[in-house]
Length: 113
Image (cartoon, rainbow, N blue to C red; front, side, top):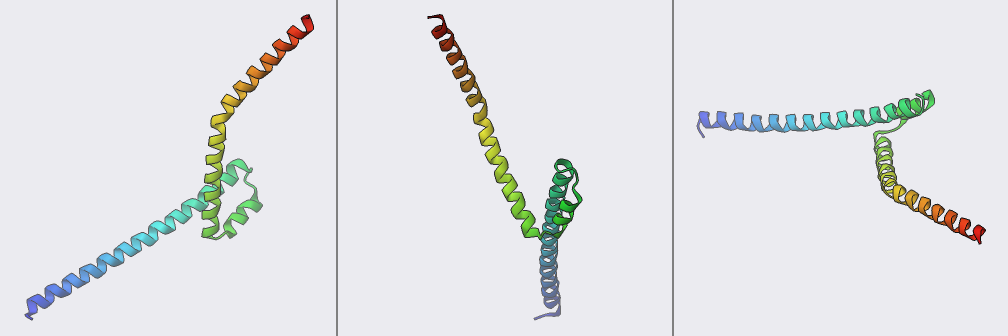
């Protein structure tokens, strides 16, 4: 192999190793930022909805990243359930009002007779 070919091969291998290292570093950075963002979301929830309870904030600080992820998954699923129930609460309320009106009218008719 000529010196020029060896040099190009070395440069190519170096470029591949550098690109792989940059990809892995970027992936690790994105993962770390996501974990920080999730923890911040939980802390913001505690501050906004639970009056910034210091004991709960300390508890959030002690949770592992996996615990935070599970907590957010549960909260997301709970939000989905609330949304589904919310869709039906309007029609149920309307039906209950209609039933109440119907019973009121029936009671009024019974009293008259």
